[in-house]
Length: 153
Ligand code: FES
Ligand code: FES
Image 1 (cartoon, rainbow, N blue to C red):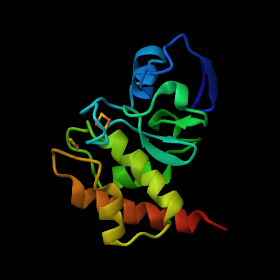
Image 2: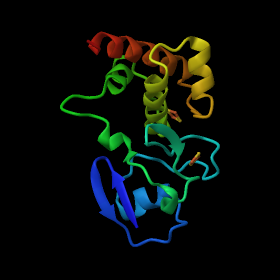
Image 3: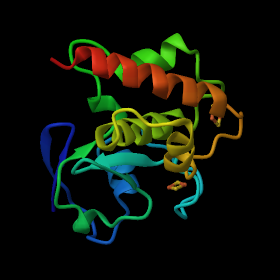
């Protein structure tokens, strides 16, 4: 089975119905996506597949036919603007949910470059944070949106 992750092509020895999260973490040793609920309810496992945020615990690896981006592949020479904003706003507390939050935020800003508070809340509603970092997540998304707008020609 073939899988492209963070720009690298892999050939996996795995059952086609293995959840993508398992393939990433247990076969490819890509540990950014986290196991939270395993039921599509928490968002800790969020990665971007073909430009869309997906819950990697809920998609079979054999059904993935587009490139996968995890938080490990987000930064180029510099951190991604969303990562920069996350640091500047000191978003993380325990950190467990944050990879999923960031990947969901990146996908949101790709589809909506200037989301309102309500749009942020709606888009991020499936990403739970037991530490309650939601106000800082919202502030960081606004800051990242401004950074991305400033970077556009
Ligand atoms: S671990 Fe995938 S949504 Fe919770
Ligand atoms: S920072 Fe702890 S669960 Fe979100």
